[in-house]
Image 1 (cartoon, rainbow, N blue to C red):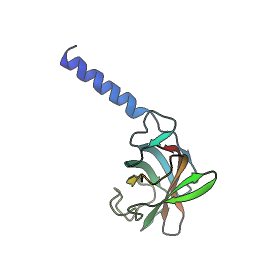
Image 2: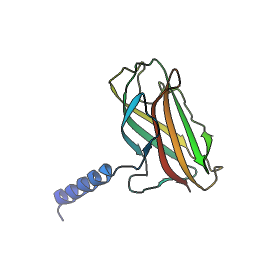
Image 3: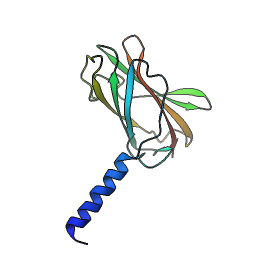
Image 4: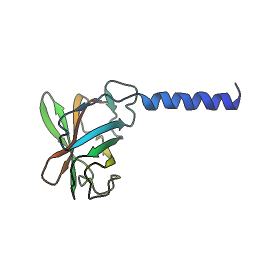
Length: 150
């Protein structure tokens, strides 16, 4: 196979993998509209595998439906119906997340975050609930992703 054909196959394969949609549920994005969700390593599975001792990188593209000066991220692992908080290195979503605050109504934004998967976490299936809230606690987005910590 020539180098050009190899490159074409590689580009096509990466486009196919990149277009595979991560399974997620919108759980109450009243003040925003989720456009897309991506999690590193979760492109080809119905359950996102979170590897112990590594970090998971999240990207959410959304449209804000409200003007807001500040935003706060909150993550919970829901196990047997009970939400357990996941500590974030940075809960202020206006810092080191790709967002430049204030956010404006009708504008599209890309939020990124990395969450460490501690080796102390149990090896278990979990529903990850990720919320981005405006100053009054209203969800700009709320997503749930089926996952497993391994």
